[in-house]
Image (tube, rainbow, N blue to C red):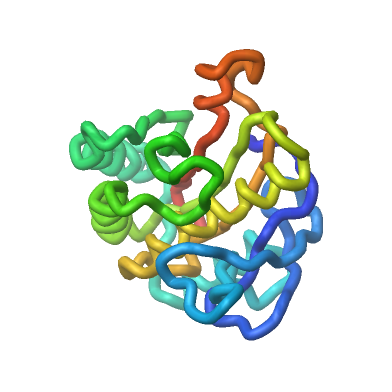
Length: 222
């Protein structure tokens, strides 16, 4: 379970204005935020986030997926489904720099920022496109998983800047996946800033580990 945090960017891909929704982890109302990346058009870019027709985001995602004809997983089917997906991801992403980790029924993909982005940037480096293309193909073969794209930063610099950068990087990854036909209703996009380090910020090695985007794949149970 991800820890409680402040406001994050969550907006509809084709929305013309700002909106708010509920973070499924915290129950808090969160603000919208512009995204950057491959789908950005005019200045400021398009808007990406969590598409929902209700103020309860998890309920909204469930309703959207059911409406799209995505069936829920149940019982023993969950473990087998996630096992197959994990095996394919490890095979397909080998050598890409993406770490594939299993946490219970969830699969966590750790994308180091130094591999995915240039320093202090939120536009995806072109050399990382093949890895994201492969990820999108695998995700499209396994539609019964929810996709949480979460950005993280190290503790260098002001808190608000790190929060914004983590949001923009998560939005860029999510935008790219949507551009490769991943159903946007499956996505939740957030930034955690520097609030959830996985290593010490006292060393460069630790800070490099903390600068990351995590893609968390969770079974859709309806």
